[in-house]
Image (tube, rainbow, N blue to C red; front, side, top):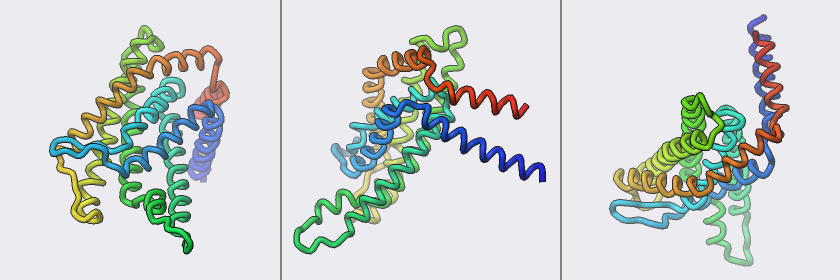
Length: 254
């Protein structure tokens, strides 16, 4: 009975922790992160470059914002917090996709909305692929970012530490995000449901590498903003309620 109560209490603690976290992360960051995840899912339906050795989908234009947001949250709140935010964004994205789909199937007898319906209705296997890819890459990015930060013992909050952990985790996370999505969408599902259209494995790998490099460039451009934001959050003691709750839970567990 004691073990059962302990498990229930742990589940309750996790729920409360998530609630406190979501109201502790500044709303602008959460909003931009969620928007970027939703936009990635829509833009990924279009291939903007398709050559024999490389292919790139439209999601590459916004995915850097998702990883920048995760890097900022990981630095300030930790990898578990960034992963919880990623799960929240994924759930919101699935809800939006459901609403889009319902709208797309509502009959409109007077006007032809075929093109509009095909766009917002989405494709189920693109959604499935992007969800698996995003959640997998989010975990990779967040925990790799945090692990690299542990190396900088003398100055963990310095600019070198922030840039190193952000650049490496973004490149690796983006590579796996692109690769997982490309393999599932364009090698497994597309040949079946898109009249034989497919990417080769070389295209998937090159897309992943090229995409990761392009997104790394965007990270390099915007990371100074992320670094300054993290310093400001620390100075202003942003998220104190969340950190105090974690300390209290740890003391209770001891």
